[in-house]
Length: 637
Image (cartoon, rainbow, N blue to C red):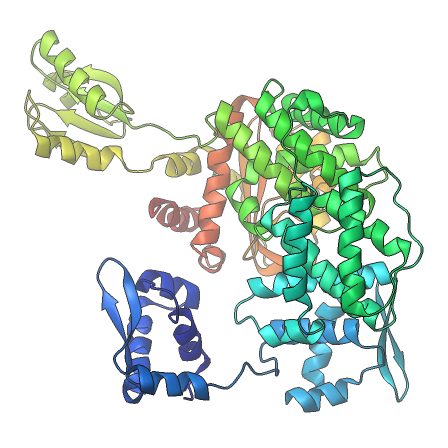
């Protein structure tokens, strides 16, 4: 069966073994629910002659119903295997990298272009990303006239790069199983799965599922490389490993030797020991761990966060134990440059933006005094521990509770009874004042969020809910509609964003000039001190502050502002921001006095990202238009 377009094929694959609702399908395919319904209709028309249909079950979603198993079986049998030809740029980049990593000879782009039915220019464009990936592993491509390109680098780097690519592949959309088969010897993964599980269990070594999968992939890559005559160079671990790890590495090496058909050097077993130690999980109390470097780093991180951000997590024994357990194995990975993937890195940055900045600042500060480089992936894992610790001890998810004006002309006892009912039903309500009808009429404006009155009154500039002295359930529901509105982000917009700190840049300007101009203005106005500018530059040099979708959040290391303010810059033409381009820039200056509210400021920017608001924000011609668009975005969540 041929599909008219790629999306129908993708939809068909999604619903093969899973029941999914319209909303989830629309999100996965990046289309509307209306398009999903139209695609389902098209699929059902194609499947009609094969005795199958996709039907919608309310409350669960679409599922495949087979009315004629024999006809559908013929469809499955006739389905071609996954094509080896990569179609998308991402697939081509992975395929190119695997080809170079597994080829003992030079490769010509012309030959690959003919094989994959694309132009040579297309592959040359794909090679930009491939070269960038290789550079991260100190691998280089050398071009030889009339021969093509060949990859050069250490065997450790080649194996690390290939293993990392194979780790990433199943997480990609449209994962091509045959690319995995092309990179590894047939049957290697299946054989190693049983061997690894039995060996690790016998030697009482605990790994996470991801850790075990990574070791399995590395071993399969080792089988491929050793069988082709590429052993590891001499290698010896710097620190002692436990006896059970050494014995497990010996048994796993024996399995690799059997699959590769060649003897293994001692360096292979030593490298296996390092890999297992770097991913081993431990269930021990803090007092039982004696790792001076790990202990020092834990204390340094928690001390740095306390002194620079006013969050004291130093007495959290659970957090200390979790960090210590993780960092002990992390230091082994960092020492030997073993990359551990973090598939949730982008989500961590967006869901824990403040914890990310705290941890990154602390780790970067510590990194100045050590020869090791801690990758973003490792920082991401530390951020999860810090983020949970912050949620345990502080109201990180700052919320502005609804402030209510109560208008009541009855007795004091009745007022207290109404207040008690409101507090019992909606404890988050803050009744700021109680006025009589006459006092309310004399008010020119209302500063509270809404008004609750026991008599009919005119609205001034805020909503009014009229209730009986003994409120009915319906009246309490009407109050609830106003109580449950999120006022935090709109309030933060009003408080920390203003026209004096708003700029539209149409011409060319570089990042450093922008930082200099904005920080100079904030310094002159008394929002920041002289150190703020250098701290912003230093923070940007560590890791780009690009949040995504052209939105950047430059800020200082720590809470260095005298007063909190957000400087908004719109750059329709774009400003070079590392390897990306920023169109909407928010320079954050947060003081220690408002640190409790800082998380809500970050929430505003995450909301802009979810709403894909960059394009709309860039069309704003002044602060009033910007605020209108911003309010629309934050009010929808």
